[in-house]
Image (tube, rainbow, N blue to C red; front, side):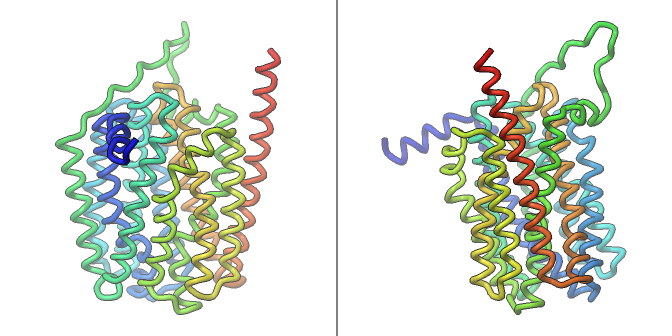
Length: 409
């Protein structure tokens, strides 16, 4: 079968609305990733404040994201995905423009808080929409495609943004704002909501649960998964939020070189995500997560031994192998754990986990950097990821026992 035939078959496999999300993710990520890897450097240069203060701004954004993630899933289950996605894209675009005008700590704090409130709304609604569109057996590959789109954007965006930032941060902010606004208008005019599954039948005499995350938090397997995932995610957040400043201030790695580190990460996802997904789909979910967390731990911990672009690139490669294993597997796990009428709520809870990690990671790293040593934040992140690997391994053993008991019965 030729490449053209394979491509045509792949495009026919998924609905047109899925491919709108795919290409929209690609274009919007190019725009945003021209800015976000360098935002800590921009704030540091503009305000001349300690790294802990910058980490505090990132944490503020993450706390706001945690708050909005706790209820947006339920809103998207009730009112549909499209309106949430459009609102997120338009407000996010406006926020990027206003970053270029900010001059004080108060300005940056307000903008980081607003961006935190809306940054995850689009992704929660989009992930839930994919779960609405597709049956369980097709979701892992579909989420892998979405990650490929996201990381293709990340491969392109920072490489462009690094050169723009070295010349003018304003141009990068304006381009990011324009792309997000255009994508928001495209979603508004072209996307159609997929009807969500009907709510589960009410138990006689008992009203249906309406608390935001109550049903999700009573799912013991999801809660255990959450704890392990947060540990692993904190390690990766350290890299994406603080490595740019660490590499520049301690070893003189400029923005344009750092942009290529992010391109390595994203390029590996684009090149290998489908291959890795098709290999891991044959294995137990939590075993895959445990192996991925192990790679995260080694990759993040090894940054402490680096001193130049090449050594940091090797650490990024190791960490990215972990990302290839963990990221789509984790999203698919959440989608498959959720009842059909609660995809949005479970995805909301999942992004609450991401927000918790984003809140913990920068402050954790900033405190270690300012009070112990710059390298200590990478040791700390590596240890957390290894603890996550141990927890995932325990869940994998439990999954194997359940499967054996099921066969025996």
